[in-house]
Image 1: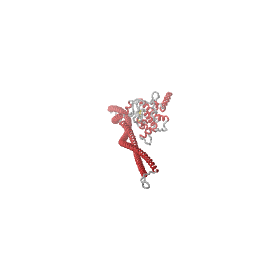
Image 2: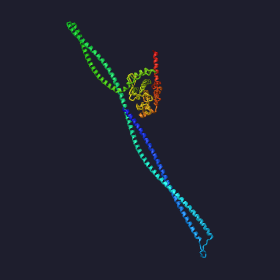
Image 3: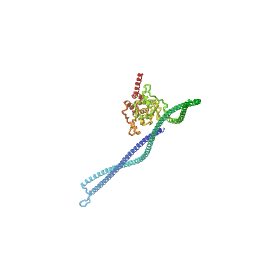
Image 4: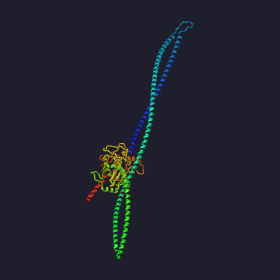
Length: 581
């Protein structure tokens, strides 16, 4: 339960880390968007400032040009008017003159009258030009008014630009404050992400510690089971010794009773001999023979006394040994009861299940009884499959066919009950006294999965036997994970090694997971082509294409040629037996 709770906390921490990462990415994108908007705002402000400065420079240049042209036109008009006035004065002064004798008579020569006419014409022309210049001056004044109006418009535009600039400055300050707030939130999220990662690492460490504790508990359980088996063997030996001692005790009691009877007979003979000796005292000739007979009987009586003492001593020793054996037997019974209480949890999951036998269903013949008998003779003492593989290093294909067939039937029975085992490994496969397999430790099993589409998402099991879909843990997993574990177990039985744990290399959880997802198992030459085909189809990384995961389920595995070979030999042996009969 504690391991399950830590796994749930680890999943929640991982989801929290994913959520915080998504929020961090979202805030980073918002911060980048705000930075881009700020840069666009600054560029627009610079463009407005440049336009405003250009308009001011253009307005000043036009005003200066208009003022300069106005002043030049006024100066030209004033100079032309002065020039015309001077010419008019000169003409007026030249038209009136005195005679050579000093008479004051007015004389108007014909040439001067013509010049006067020209001067009047020129004056009229000058007046017309003055009028035209005045019109131009008025036009320039109108243009100046227009320029002043444009200047006012530019001033208004400048004021609006300044107001817009102030608004942009305010928006800039708001964006800066928002950016600072985003930076602060980003820092807080980074702290939360670091805390979540630290919590994730701590949870991973706790999970690894729990896995180590679980392995230590499994080893302790295996040692306790081995000790229990040893104690049971000692108990059987002690029972045999007790039976032998009881038989010896009965035999000694019989011998003691015989000796008691012999002693009584000897005493009766002594009485008779004494009586006869008294009767024969008178017969001196027979007295010597009777004395010799008496000595002989006395020596036999002494030997009987010695034998009786020895029997009494042996009886006392046997009674002491019997009491000691009874006390040892009581202690062994107490230890056996304690070990049975400790292993009761392992048996509870099997009490509700009818363990299938060696044979297939009614449509397929029974596996070779000869092979099963050989295997039962080899493993009559039971124990873990792991221990026998360690002692044997690897099994023959005929042996693997028998044990694998029983495991297939057990998995088929579990799947029909809607149970996914999820912890098939050598340590959980035991052999009973007849050599049949027994599956134990249903702590990681998943119940009530009756529909093929149902999935579970728990990350559990031993990493060497874990299917790829459990490691990926994206779309969940179903009953196909048990067939993957069967492929791993059959590979270990045939080769003595795990397919994804390499000797001399790093076999960390991450490295083994990578090999399971990416690599193919290496097949040694000792594995035949039929067995290799079975392992390749069981170790298919796609659960939909894996052998046993189809609609027929375990029937696909049972009809594979690897198991059909044993059935074929069984038919041949039965045919030979029928012909022999």
